[in-house]
Image (cartoon, rainbow, N blue to C red; front, side):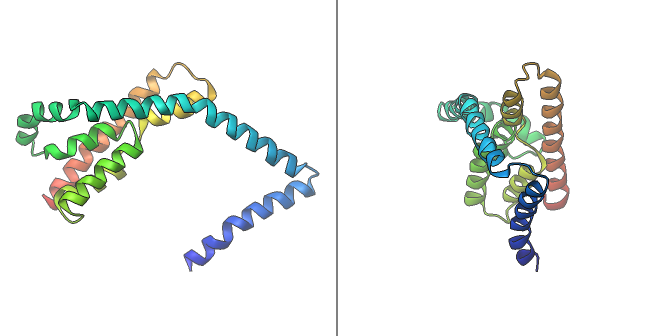
Length: 174
């Protein structure tokens, strides 16, 4: 029922907007083309930000810096009952959704979806957001240069989401 409804609701909304705009004597086709032009120019202006972020993440992972960091803090993680294999996900999630999805997919593929790590990776994916990506794209799109407070709050929310997912999964599945 929901699938059938969703197949019809989006075309209905688009048709409604076009008909309402025509009724109000708005040049709907011209506005559509104008919006398309703005979208393309916005995508081109965001490309350097996205490319820089993707390259930085790739270099961090390929250089072995992430593995060295995880190895360095492994004793503390073991003491806190935090699996060291989850740290790359916790580090990449605030930066990039694609990179963190790749890390989570690797964890689930290696450990299995019903394993503790698989459940923890899934919970962490849903409990955090891509703060740096959001700030880069959305603040860059509207030209906001000062994003210090938004960055602090976003990273704090990510940290709380990571801690909450660790505690909840430990209590439920650990």
